[in-house]
Amino acid sequence: MVPATAAQAVPLVEVQVKGDLDAQAAPEVNRLLEEALALRPQQIVVDLADCDTIDAAGILLLMDAHRRAVRDGGAVALRSPSERARRALRLAKVDRIMQLLPYPNVALTPAGQVVL
Image 1: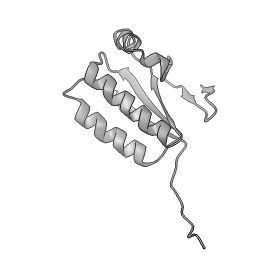
Image 2: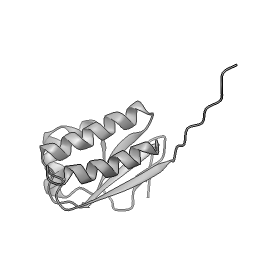
Image 3: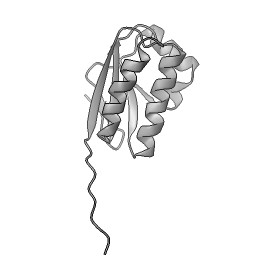
Image 4: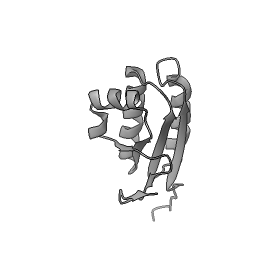
């Protein structure tokens, strides 16, 4: 007989980044993303409305979080990046891997549909 196991999962976790997402901020944002990933959500939305710039360390952090979320059956989406941050994400081709949500109050359903 195989013992039953249960895994806690939530549908959506939001992480709000305030200030630049750079090498200096990466450890704190990583801690928040670790907490979010521990909940095994179907969707993590990283709100970048108050984040002006993202450097390579920030991009690597987001990509790693997305990779780990996908491994557990979830995904990471980025909401409301500034034009400057959006440009950095496009140059790094992050927009081909993660969904960029343009509006402040947008999330996704598990099927990937936009919910306003």
